[in-house]
Every structure is written in C-alpha cells, then in structure tokens.
Figure 1: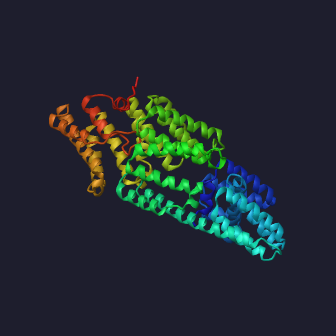
Figure 2: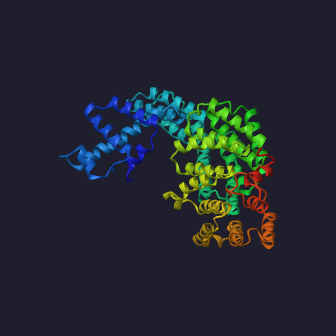
Figure 3: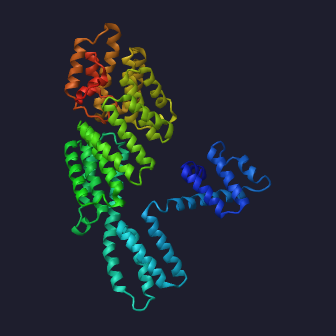
Length: 506
C-alpha cells in the first residue's frame, strides 16, 4: 500500500507518539533507534515525501534503496507493536488473544496442562464478552490438546464447542447483515433520499435476524437487533414510535442492570445519544436538555471521559442545547474550540457549517460568509455528496438574498441548477428544486419591485402549506418553509425557528 508508513504516522495521537518513542528506546540499540526516530520525526513533520530520493540518501548516502526500505519496514513494525502495547488494556479482546498466544507458546513447549490453563482463562473472558468466533478457536486448540492428555474431559469440551458453534455462526451472519445496513446507509449518504428502498432493505434484514430463545439471551446480538430497529424507524421518519421504543428499551436495560456492567457503558452512551436526537426531532427540548446532562455525566464518570470521540459527542450535544435555548455565543465558543482541535473532514463540515449558521442567526452575515467560504474553497468540497453540496449552496444563496446581493445570488442559482441538473430531474429532489425556483423568482422580482408580488406570495404560501412540519436536525440546514415565511413577513429567521419550537429568543 502506497504511503503506508506516512499514513500510519499521521494517524497517531500525541499519547501514541510518546508511547512509541519510549517503546522504541527500550528495545533497540542506540544507533538503530536513532535512525528510526529520525525517520519518524521527518515523516511526522510532513515536509518530505517518503519516496523522495533525497530522503533515502540522507540515511544511506553510499548505500542502496533496499537498506532504506528495511528501515521503513522496521519502523512500521515498531509502531504497530507499540500500538498493541498501549491499547492492550483498552479492549477485553486483547486479553483473550493474549491468553491464546500464551497457550500456543506452552503447546510448542510440550506443556499441555499449562497451555490448557491459559485456554480456560481465555474461555472465561470470551464467554463474558460474548466473543463466540474467538471461542471457536479456543475450543479447537483445546480439543487438540486434550487428545494428548490422559483422563481428559473431552466430551464436555466438545459439547461446549458444538453449542458455541451455532452461536458463532449466528453472530457471524448477523454481523454481516449489520455491516450491510451500514453500507447501505452510507451509500445513501444518510441524506433521507431513496428512503423507501433503504427502509425495505432494513425490514428484510430484521426479518432475517429472527432469533431463537437461546440466542435472545445474548446482549451483544440484542444490541445489534436494536440498532436495526432504530435505523428502520429513523429512515421511515417514525420519530414518535422511535422515541417510545428508545425510552422503553432504556428503562428495561436499566432495570436489568445491563448498563451497570462496565463493558456495556458504551451502549448506554449510544442509547442516550439516540434519545437526545429523537427528542430534538420531536421538539421536546426540555427532555432533550435533561438527557444531554445525563449523557455528559455518564461519559465523564466512565473511562470514556478522555476519549476524543465521546468528547466530540458531548460538545456536539452542548452546541445543540445552547443553540435552541438561544445561547448562541456559548454554542459558538464550543465550535471555535473544536475548530482548533479537529482535522477530520466530516467533523470540520459540522463545525464550519454550524458556525456559519450561528453567525447568521446572530445577524453577523459577513462572518457567516467567512465560514462558508472555508467550505466552498476547500479542495474536499467537490468530494462531498451531492445532497450535502446542494444544501451548502442553498445556504449561500439564502444569505446573498438576505443582504440583497441579487446579482451574485442569480449566479449561484444558475450554477447550482446547471451543476446538479441530473439530480433535480429525480423526484426525490423535488423539494430542493421547488424551493430554488421560488428563490429564483424572488431574485428576479425583488430588485424591480422592492417587495414580494401577490402571485409569488401565493406560490410561497402553497409551498409552506405543503411542507412537512419543521424539526431541528433535518436535512435542510436552513428550513425552507420557515425561511420563506420569515422573509415574506419581514421577521428574523432565527426568531421564527424559536417561535416554532415554543421558545423565545429574548
């Protein structure tokens, strides 16, 4: 794989870099270690291509490229080994594999009883964590060893192995179906387009995941099926039903003390985050705020408090809470901190686009354009999905109309209709197409008349009347019908949002 070493180094966190250097200095001779660390630092700085001739000549001015490639390969192995060391306590699967490795070592040493002791430890931990596929390997090694041990419990182990085999096969099958769900949703860009096809696909998968009573006891599989159900309801827009389901499941899992077990703490966090988003969609903002408080408390009390992904989740929820309670400066403060810390493209889109919207809500249109330009001028913008690009262009177009820059707005409209003409011929984009048509007519009439003419007002009202209810977190960065209503009536857009949510901006 090209640039394997560079990509590996660039992926490391500060903690992992520090651990690598400590690990490398412990297990390498000084001369060799110096070359490894020097090459690591050069590639970490990102100023030199790992395949550039000057780089290998720097290390081996009189040598061949092969010697340099050997150093690169050793560095890859060294980094990988250091990652295994630092992460070995973060996942119980590492401990299971460690016992398996030790069992293999003692098998090679012809110490079968000692090897079996380690297999027993591996089995106990794998059963606790429901690693049925790994249990298959454990039992395979175990039965092989028992054939060499007199008075062995062969029948008992074989029975356990056969019982586990069914669970392992179901686990594998269900896991493949779950990944198929994620792939299908990813290919639909989570945009809500082609909802019916995706939802039918999910229904088929849920039918395929019918479990026997024995398998129903597996919490791991229960969580997987819950994930399927949640996705079906989300795609279908069954927000009320989804909320009832989430609340009932959360209560059952809490009563069963599932979340009290440390290994399922991440499932509690996931469940709470789903509840936050569902309450938001249903405009039950007081319940959303209380759930956000509970979510943040749960993360901070768990061992996930320092995890970047969960820290991001907490910040994201706080931005939502601050925004819809009218505390825009607090929301912008969090986004500003996130902008300094993250370089992940998906996260940056969230940060930058939301910063642009919040500045617009505050009436700082120029600042809003500054944020939008960071997205539009970025090289990665063209790689975004079509729905996301259209959404961002619509935000820019609306802002241009707000500041009465109708010439520029007209150019944006023409560009968007031309660039995505194939998309707009598809019926799933009818709402974007109709909204853009109304914006086009606003752009044409506003400079000449200075007001929205009666016939256009009627068409706008028809669009508003036929629109689905507004809910925060929809695929419209700017809610089309609420914006049109605020534009026609001359009220601030954000005030119109808060009014719809039953909240005041004062």
